[in-house]
Image (cartoon, rainbow, N blue to C red; front, side, top):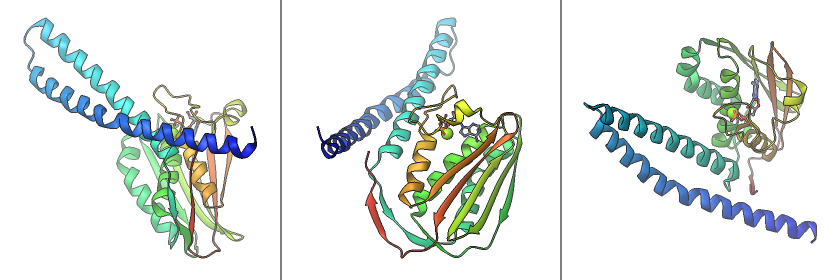
Length: 240
Ligand SMILES: Nc1ncnc2c1ncn2[C@@H]1O[C@H](COP(=O)(O)OP(=O)(O)O)[C@@H](O)[C@H]1O
Ligand SMILES: [Mg+2]
């Protein structure tokens, strides 16, 4: 089989898988809605048996949420995004993402420090860029279960907009670092392992790069660089 045919086949399988994941969502939300109703019905359980049933329903609900998370992460990864690059004030976009995670960070005793440098407008697909940044920021927060600092720096670097997302969390061994961009690689109990592959794919689609420095026990720093130059342009569709 030629490389071209392989690529076609992969793209086709990707579309099939994305279709499948999409189809799973409807019955899943019916399941969820009905389990929620059941939970309400049995909430005031009086007998031992009724209380045991409530616990079972809760477990089922937790598992359906997990399924939903897996399917949504997959769709975000495999989704046929059309890039819509428009010049944006990246500092403002980043500030919005950090505001969004503010409550979560506060709850986890994570202090958010911003150090924003001057940057010209950068052509990005703002929703996809936010998604990529959110994935890095959530990982950073999750790497600091006992609190710490999340430092987000921006600066112009040559003809690129550079964004550093640093944390004072667990850090990673070089063995872990070698695998983090692999699809489905996760060291977390309930991780999907799609956050970083998705973030990297989005940055690559913007002709950018993702770099990493990390030290076990000290923390990690992810560096995104996105080219400033270039017209706002309609990029190619991302496919598997
Ligand atoms: N900031 C970080 N600090 C420590 N480990 C990290 C960090 N970001 C990512 N990782 C590691 O990379 C793995 C893959 O991340 P990701 O693709 O987002 O999947 P998930 O978060 O679902 O596990 C994580 O399970 C974790 O081991
Ligand atoms: Mg993640």
